[in-house]
Length: 211
Image 1 (cartoon, one colour):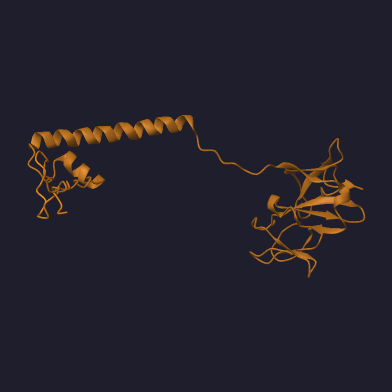
Image 2 (spheres, rainbow, N blue to C red):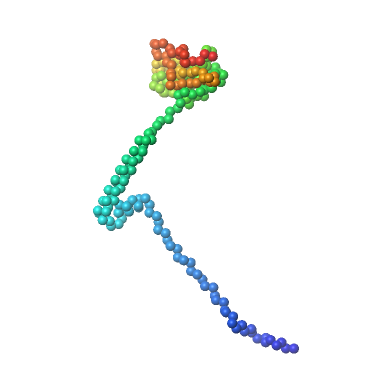
């Protein structure tokens, strides 16, 4: 039997809303940001450079800047009065260990404190590493068994006694003593000397430790 429906093209249904074509949105225009003014530009703007500014206004700004700078410098100097500059010097009194820590000969592990620890058959003493010529710091030469000043060539033996160069006297010795725990305490603020032609202080109490 013939179909009741027509084979012709389908008609659109009544009442249906046709779909609208998607609209293309235009992106918003980018707003260019103004570059930030640098320090120089700000200073020039403050003084009115680059633009027409009343001369009286420019002079007023200049005076304000000078007064502000003057007051700022004086305020800084006022604060520095309460925070004086101090120099931090190394300690002059310090421990170096027990007598058993040192063998015979010259020990150089305390050169940062500018001392050498020397032990011999009689005891222990501390040589202060300052040349008696002009105050340079000598070096210990183990291969030559002597202290040698690099400035003007003064030489000292293992006990600090001068024997060559312009040094007028032996190296000084720092005060040494034992504390309550039996450790060696060195005091470089107290030095023992042997001036040329005068009595030696190297046998005074404090100049050496008898072990």
